[in-house]
Amino acid sequence: SAAPLLGATEIRRLADELDVRPTKTLGQNFVIDGNTIRRIVAAAHLGPAETVLEVGPGLGSLTLGLLDAAERVVAVEIDPKLAARLPQTVREMRPAKADALDVVLADAMRVTELPHEPTALVANLPYNVAVPVVLHLLEHFPSLRRGLVMVQDEVADRLAAKPGSKIYGVPSVKATWYADMRKAGVIGMNVFWPAPKIHSGLVGFERHEPPVTTASRQEVFAVIDAAFAQRRKTLRAALSGWAGGGAAAEAALRAAGVDPQARGEKLGIEEFAAIAAHQGAAPA
Ligand code: SAM
Image (cartoon, rainbow, N blue to C red):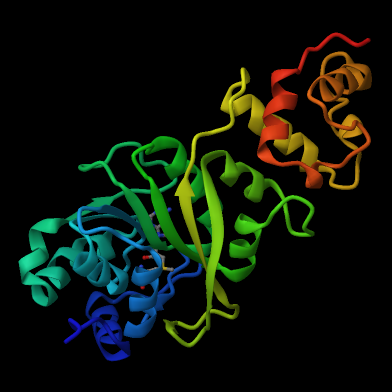
């Protein structure tokens, strides 16, 4: 006896009532299929005591499924009309859970305070800002231990990519500063209204300790940005903008145990952390 979720009819009715015209800029594609919601919630492996942070609850499709599985949901929505309607939808469809929901009207890329400490992130993210949102939340909410996000499929592959793969890049490395990332499935286009033109992908993550290094997170991320700014360049060339030029870059790379002729796409987060720690190493 699964509790009712929002289907195509309910989503259309809510959108009409609110006079919502889904916009691309806000990545508004609403899930209209209960099985997809159940699949996302199952893949998130939530415990009953979890406080889930949901980014972009929209009309509430996923919010209802999350309220069934977790203790609380804190939903951060940027669209005032959608944020204002959500508590009512939950009162109508999950009256017993009305007090377990907090709605925060805010931009998830900027939010730094929430009414409850979130333990998990589960979201069907607005696709154009998915990576910065995930990185921002992992940075600012250390209480987030795990999560499952739906993003554009290509971005899911990038987030979960390992060193040496063609699509390994800045999002892949920065995400692994915080967490182990894994691809957790592909979702078709027809489960959304309006239907996007591309497939979606699920990415799960489990937080781990960042690599041990004397460099700051910002310094490590600056090395990553420089290393991938020109993918085809060797690390020595890519980092030669440092004070001291190519010689200083070569000294830092050697001190970190990294081949100066290698390319950034071969390195894991530990190696970037070691390079950043040796920035300023004296040339031999
Ligand atoms: N969770 C709903 C669902 O699955 O049907 C909606 C998902 S829709 C892909 C993305 C949602 O994120 C929209 O409701 C949109 O208004 C909201 N949104 C877009 N940019 C946002 C931001 N920067 N911060 C918070 N919410 C945002």
